[in-house]
Image 1 (tube, rainbow, N blue to C red):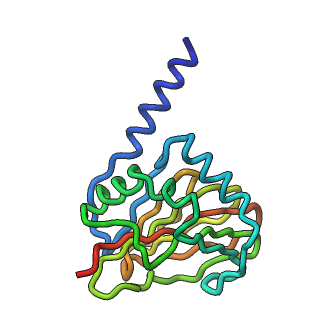
Image 2: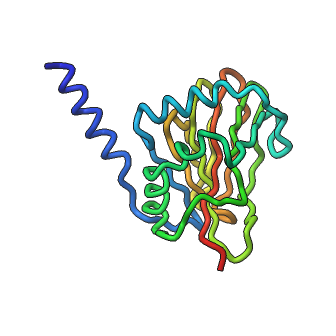
Image 3: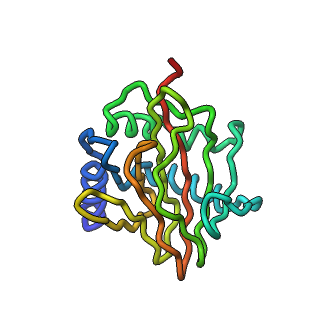
Length: 194
């Protein structure tokens, strides 16, 4: 009986954290937990764990990265209908789709790595562009910082969470990691070309 109760509570919590209202992405970001179903998320995690060809990332001190080719077998699972519909719903933009010009990046923050304050660059002219960070694992002491008009807020992203910011939107950074590590997928959504 206790197992059924625990499962029911987990399902309610999963449904509750997936609901979100559209926000002003010029000044804000949104964070959701439990984005993928557990089985899909575990497969994404373990497949990324096996990637051996990591390179230094020139965009962040000490961070490692691997660009996933568009033919990688994990791409359909990353861009599942669940993720696509979640991003469309929380942005209030049903025209958004995974951006074919910007492939997903697998990134690892190890001790000593960090990312300076920045706003994400608009890579596609005349198109709304949203940067999405899917946390795969996080044993680090690092936090993501968001620069709101009323002050800086810190966020420790959990595995199977999604952080969405718009290009040219809120300023953010990643604090230096001093212990543990954090692995993420960075994906981009955009509107179709005009």
